[in-house]
Length: 296
Image 1 (cartoon, rainbow, N blue to C red):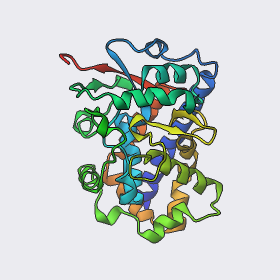
Image 2 (image 1 turned 120 degrees about the vertical axis):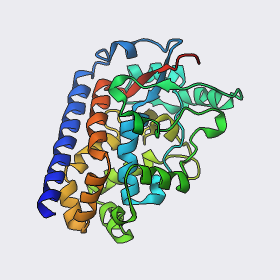
Image 3 (image 1 turned 135 degrees about the horizontal axis):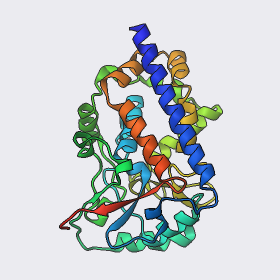
């Protein structure tokens, strides 16, 4: 069991390292904001609908699994639905991946939230951001009415999703183990990054967030800018570096065996690999174009 655990941990660290390196390379390559995918270099078209990459199925599932593994109540605050970015926000983030001033973008989000027309449409993620069909169906659907914007998953749906993805009670950290990972103020640099990332991924209604953005895959930084959760310098992208020390954290906090269960009983390694491809393909803005389903 110990050797198997070490192998799985080694695979995880290698995947995370590859993901971090690929995303870092894509950011450096795209710092002039001109080297973005051809499809993303244009304004939204009739059949193209932009979404924050963190809502892509493999990335959503990676973060859900680690959040639920850490604390199910926290995972229940992840978004239940995904919402396309307003065109003006999308265009601004393509040109400014580090963020656009919220005070200039706020009215576009309000206009979208004020739309009272019921929707009946779905969209298809680009191939770089997909996973296998059985998991794809479990990902957050497109919202159908404004009341679903930033709606949290909720405990019942979170439990169902966790079970479908292979998590059981023996995999979940105890309160003591969770506190060991997150720490208490004053936190060390790694704990600060994780804490900020957990907040950003769960910035939904009911989480005490003044301006929730979870359904968009965005966050509002300390400078007052809106940006993707996996944009350059965003806490959740920086968190990849912390996860490179996952085996050390698990050993220190006493949950190596639980981590081994997470890695062996869920598709998280598959999602890490697929999520890395998705982030790299749509760096640096970390906004992907989806396509409207046929017949919609």
